[in-house]
Amino acid sequence: MNVTTGLRAAARVAGAVKEYGVGDTRVRALDGVSVEFPAARFTAIMGPSGSGKSTLMHCAAGLDTLSEGHAYLGDTELGALDDRRLTLLRRERVGFVFQAFNLVPTLTVRENITLPLDLAGRAPDQEWLADLIEVVGLGDRLGHRPSELSGGQQQRVAVARALAGRPEAVFADEPTGNLDSRTGAEVLGLLRRAVDAMGQAVVMVTHDPTAAGHADQVLFLADGRLVDTMDAPTADRVLDRMKDLDRGAGR
Ligand code: ADP
Image 1 (cartoon, rainbow, N blue to C red):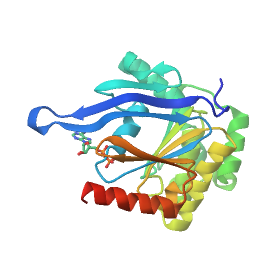
Image 2 (tube, helix red, strand yellow):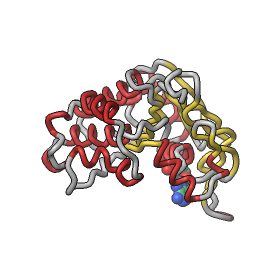
Image 3 (cartoon, rainbow, N blue to C red):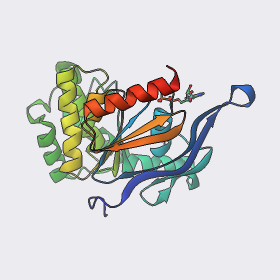
Image 4 (cartoon, protein in one colour):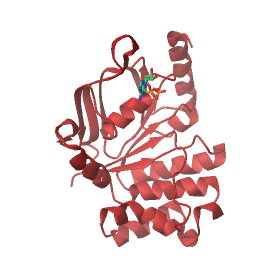
């Protein structure tokens, strides 16, 4: 599969509209968004609270469905799939990293990393797994339980778990939200390596300009619309842009 060329969109949405609720309580969380998440590229999604970042990520990752428009993982259109096929597709082609790590406390580090594969009845690619464990720097912790690890180490396990099945895209929702700046930087460095060394598409929702500074491109949302993009971002430039958006949103 052609996931490491950098040319192919690992995930994309076209004309994405998402509405919640009905009548007076209806909210248009996405209002016609078209974006691509290319392979071997690290994309950060930013914007004021309520601007639609999580909704965009969930719809692009197949965790939620669009009201209008189309979402694709690779060439597969998600709207055409029933729940069962969507679940299978997600399991095989998408990795997730959440703010709260979501590791299983009774399992070892190694068992946590291979859990999604075990659940899917897939044998891990041992070479990939060995590379991954080296990249995340957890080789001497494989027999430990999550409670014996620092927050940063736990999130590194979560990143390894997301990458274990060689998904086309990894979606990370505020992955450094629970970490101090040093351990946060470790996790961001790891996501960066997943992109550079392993050709993953990484899509990260964050409100932290420093975190976004590790990405290749930043997408800025406001009121459910894509209002700006920035290539080769730096934390300072991202911060300036965020201030403008916050002012625009009156927050
Ligand atoms: P962000 O991640 O940027 O904070 P969200 O995508 O969570 O924004 O939310 C966008 C808008 O959609 C907000 O107005 C939010 O209140 C609304 N929204 C999100 N999820 C739901 C839901 N499940 N039901 C109703 N409204 C929702």
